[in-house]
Length: 298
Image 1 (tube, rainbow, N blue to C red):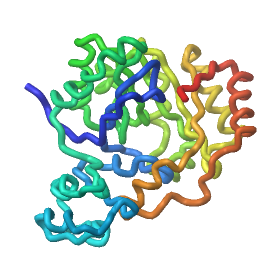
Image 2 (image 1 turned 90 degrees about the vertical axis):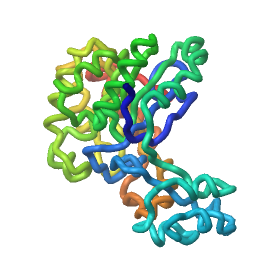
Image 3 (image 1 turned 45 degrees about the vertical axis):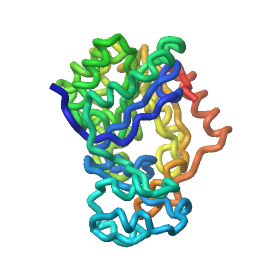
């Protein structure tokens, strides 16, 4: 019997979260609240509709379709919205988009299987991401088990803040695990993400139990963690506890800002900036100095 849960999107032809061509399954619900988050729609497990003002032509089709009588500017009356999706179907320009929907696991699997030929020809597969995929453990377990049984190569991208023993059966189905390491200082980590880092660090130490290839990712953000000291401490931690793991440094970007506008949310602080290419080169040199292998999926 299938299970149901919340889905942000299925992104086919993804090449940034593992080898080959992949479909990335984004599942909402995250225990962290990173102040720079690129996917604000993934914070909670609830249906959610976004309003893209720049695409709106003011035709009023959404108003006619809405069972709650919400006007054209959804963000002015968002408290009334039940995210039923009626306006999404009615909008001729895609100005209303279903950012999170309630979904059936078997339908998710069927959609992912449409691109099987591309996975086979490119050495790709399926990647679970978020939000935070482990926050919907029943759904993740069902999806990963059935896709694993079908022979797909599986990967997961996670913030690392979860009950390791509970998630371990899922992790053992993965060929590749990406885990974030946002800051080595627990107080700083809590300031920027809402949670301390001790559980994440302990989970990183245990990743060797999974048998998967491990990539520790650092989202490198000026104003947060883009210091030589933090990068070096992070690399030394990985080298000590996961000597075979690789590390990837991801420069901060603003690609998610449109989602903040679509949800009527304030943008992340202007203090967060993208490191220069010279800074990123220096950080990668630090990884080499420590003896950690680097990798880039871009």
